[in-house]
Image 1 (cartoon, rainbow, N blue to C red):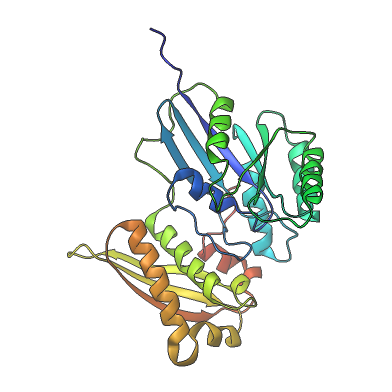
Image 2 (image 1 turned 45 degrees about the vertical axis):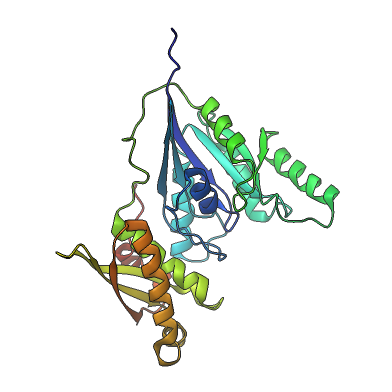
Length: 304
């Protein structure tokens, strides 16, 4: 009896901000490992999501959105995304099929077309669930994306509605090399619990705050302790760039900060499977996005 070969490999998910990369990762894994929000640039560092099934292990690399950088943080985000494409087996270029290609999309396509051919490319057209007023226009959008990536093979999905995911998984498995798994079967991510807690707290901020604050906001976990009763104690600081932003984050009578902390605590508890005591404060660090020392504190450090 012939045994079925085991396939395993790394798959980078690349795309401009807010096309649904983290949403797609969570949907493919069937559980939440990456923070998501309606705001662009929710993801700020590379994160692995590991799917282990019978005869295959798919190691996804979630990345920040590639965009026109306006500060050192933006430069780091682009670096993280571009580095993720180096050394993987497959590159998924995720695009918003409900929209025409943007300047950022064109930059990404140019980058992918210039990369060595070691990694296979797959174009994934997301958001097919969004109604289009012009079906011909939507088809034209898809054709434009295919043309940009040298007529690469394309699949259509909806990450939010979980449409087309089975076909995408099967396609990816067929593209992976035959080799043993790289990670234990039970492992689903490479992120430490305190890093996930920071991402979930920032996610809560992004969901609840006004448009002018989220991009100027960072989270640092100051303390993460296991208590004897099994509860986790977490002390965190939310950093903003201006005093006016601090007031928005705290809110009248501290209501906004309490709301943010409550939402984050519930997500952290669900992720870790235990009760959490979360203490959050807010500090101002002027222009931290262009301050390399502050970026280093938040872990935004280039690996090379």
